[in-house]
Length: 434
Image (cartoon, rainbow, N blue to C red; front, side):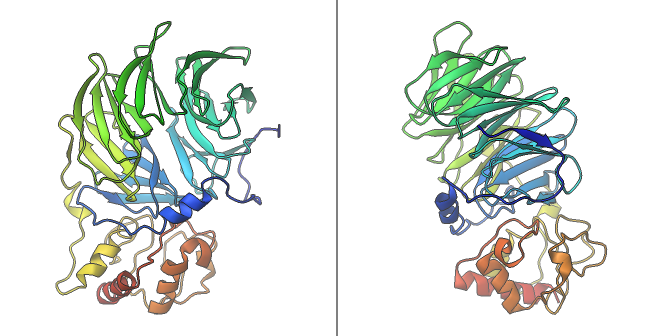
């Protein structure tokens, strides 16, 4: 077993090839986006795999290798992180205001406000699929069959082995650590590092939650959510025909949201086991779900590349985030191009007077040298300034993707594979950035 290392980040290192999810990622990145509703957060270039609440901000991460930090009040992206070299599968907020991300590149990164990670946790040899925290500690679950328990104070790590196959999720119940795996088991890790199997279901388990009342919620590929009670028999909360891929509990533990690969999200009352609502979503796989700190708002992220906001009380999509979330456009602009542009407007403004955003403004884009907007902190690659933005170079950027044309940029991986949509986007930019 390779040695685990916790170290401050000092720059990139070579990585091996993407493994199990690579083909799936490439397929999903070619999907055309759906029209965005006013309440959506639109900026990812691939399915949204993970969500986390970071104080007043919301973090989302996805198959496009990016983590986006949003201001939910405005619907704008405040920061885009592209550091991982693979899909970002897991996010977790830490009590001190930092957060951690886990990726297909087998690494876990701990983030503050800097552009580079504060810590890089290395040792897993396969994709990291789940993260959990308790004060001073971070747990990671990976497809190398291990759970790693990282002491963020001392820098030490314990490698916990016992699952037969992939480990998909971890959760802390107080100081006790639990994990769920492809082998269909839920395991508790004892103080000496040995595992105790507390439940076995016969089907791979994809998600795991620790509830305030001491119960665990787990869900798997058979479409069933079980509540595992301390010392008691599991109780089925939800059963459906589609695999469950994500769970979320309200802060008081009274409600659970169940997201499936079939696109459905169901809301359950935990004490009674009663189905309260089903969300009327886009019908595409929902990969992530999260309650806001108030317990009244529910966020979902899915294959349609959008983060959607819902009223958890009545399961209705919430209205526009704020007037400034919908940018007023001049009369006569290309409407199809405006729809394609919606994936860009989370990070970029069309005018220089719209305030700071995650990306530079695009005023007078065509004819401008890359990396030349005064006052914007460009990544090292874009600061080289070796591209002049023209319709041809912009088309190349979104045909091959920024990860190919400008490797090292923080821009999420966005591609426009439809020639008609590309032409419409270029017309729109020519009309609105003069």
